[in-house]
Length: 349
Image (tube, rainbow, N blue to C red; front, side):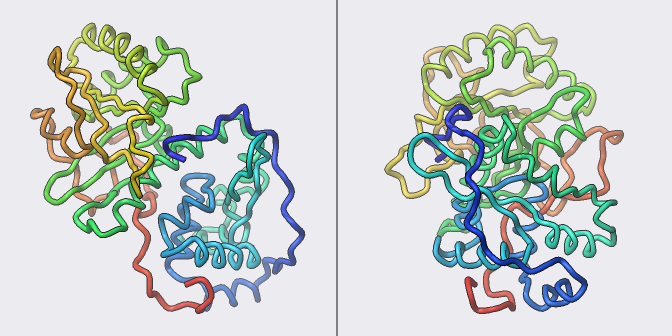
């Protein structure tokens, strides 16, 4: 999907799921869940609360050894009221099941954090409203972008890991007065690390508006005293070329262009024949690349291009380096799932 994301215009509401008996969210039910939910189940619930919606394919790629085992476990979590689901109607083919956090899952997270559900800010109607949101396709696309990194890091190359993944909502709470990135991430490959803000372009935004966002990122760098790269993901090479012309013009006019390192990539540059194409591949071209230089770089190699970057914050610290006034007390969930093998029921594990 990362190479061929579903467009918003192809989504037409959602199809009702087949009727299936579900357990009511009672005190007795919460007691039952205490003995059945594994650390991985709770991780899934926290990821849904942080990122609003994840598809069945995204969850299974990130957290399960096979699609079948993931589907079985998600079915159980749905029956127990931990997650809810809907299936958007698409004009061609069949959309995957989309999952959101359900009331029983919210109650579990709130209890773990020493809160009640109201203090947590959870409302089932608002959570399920993403099914009808005009930004559903964009949200799913951004989550697919990061999920591809998680899926890549879970397979043989153990030196790689996504050590931070912030949602659009979390970024807005921290930096919304200056910029509203689609996400924040941090990637480690061996001893090399890089962090970034993401602008995920679906091909629908006016490119001049996209380029105009550089001023906000320059203001954030000045306010925080920290240089954080900006990665811009575009759907096609043609659109990337057009965007780079406008971005370069605006970038050169900034007071301190090097405070906003920018790199671009296009989804069509990924190899669809690869077993796990991801944004970690050699698809990135820095905006300040020397004239005539067109060598695409791996994600982690960008840290070698921008020598003035300070090392990213430790992977043990979930807080991005940001102005103190924008700090939050709550931390995002770990992007990588807990190791499989935690105690729990055999079905779907």
